[in-house]
Image 1 (cartoon, each protein chain N blue to C red):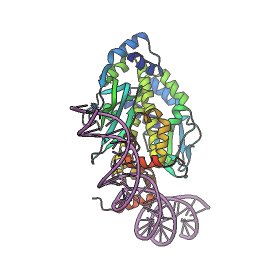
Image 2: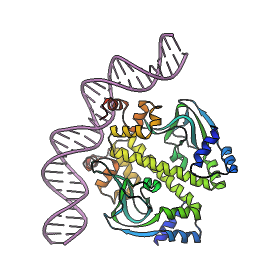
Image 3: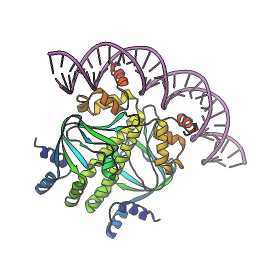
Image 4: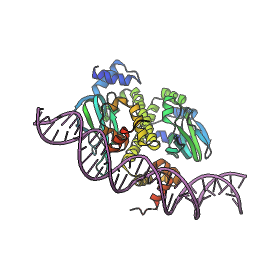
Amino acid sequence: MQPAAQILDNIQKHISVSASEKKLIESLLVQQKVAKKEVLLEAGKVATDIHFVSQGVLRSYFTDLEGDQNIVMFAVNDWWITDIFSFSTGNPAQLTIDALEDAVVYSLSKENLELLFLKMPTFERFFRILMQNAYVREQSRIIQNLSMPAEERYRQFLKKYPQFAERITQKQIASYLGITPEFLSSLRKKPNS
Amino acid sequence: MQPAAQILDNIQKHISVSASEKKLIESLLVQQKVAKKEVLLEAGKVATDIHFVSQGVLRSYFTDLEGDQNIVMFAVNDWWITDIFSFSTGNPAQLTIDALEDAVVYSLSKENLELLFLKMPTFERFFRILMQNAYVREQSRIIQNLSMPAEERYRQFLKKYPQFAERITQKQIASYLGITPEFLSSLRKKPNS
DNA sequence: CCGCACACTTAATGTATCTTAAGAAATTAC
DNA sequence: GTAATTTCTTAAGATACATTAAGTGTGCGG
């Protein structure tokens, strides 16, 4: 699929887009290739862009005082990713975003997003739906973290994101679940009762 | 403050609203008084409304398989609350919403919200900002849950939400933090080093 | 194709947090 | 205003999960 077509499909799942609007959107996106391990956003800098993942796998993570990485999200094709806190407020990012596999992304700067909102008011609706879905996802994760032991969270993760499980190492998954790789290994060994 | 004025103020922090739009908004809101312990939304039913809290304190919580309540959020004056998953998708709610103190809320049904989006496209922007802020909040909580021990999460909670700490019992706060009231009590006893 | 870094596993020991139980304090209901 | 209910605390014992350390596999850069 043509990369632009991939984003437009993603957008058109939620709003309709005229031919001239398609051109406008395409003109505001910047394609970036991101090599495995390459950093797209570094904690401490301001997140100026939101990225649409066309191919490959990205992750965002928080580095805590002990220096440990805590994975906040994974993003594969058709996902949008940024440090939403930094992108919203202009404060320094808490998260680092890098590639777990070679990736291709389309980046939209905050200025261009605001331009889109101005020139194409329905894009506000699209972005509202994007944010609302992200809110649903994060709230669902909070519920799981509060109410389930690690073993059950792991099962739910495999069920909800089978496309991640195949491509992401156990170490990364453990970090996402908030447990150590050693403990995840011991969970996996257990007969799944 | 006139209740309608309170909501309009909240909305006008993010978008400008004409006189006729103000009337429209007011006409679509329904005032509800909620007595302490009264249930506004019951898990299993569909969340048809989003509620603006004018006075009092509400909470939403998830009841897990063991029957324990896990608090997802508190809402005091000027907060909006619903089960965003159920409200978005029309699926049965996972959360129960009830009042921890006598409260007054203004409820906006999903139909009326869609009507607002149609008649007042800038309302899409307001709601986008609402959802984006909620996303930021939930992501920040996930980062804290992943990277900090309970004692530090409690400190951050007190710092971030001093208005909650005064009005909400230790038991509720413990549930929000994902720990038992007994353990919270032991944390509070420790000299704050 | 070799070597090295890194992922995954296993197991012993350690610790944060839970469970249970009971009493004291505070709030609520009649 | 007093009984009844709920909250908060304390403490002992239990458990989920972390830490450390060592060994085995696996991918990948040169």
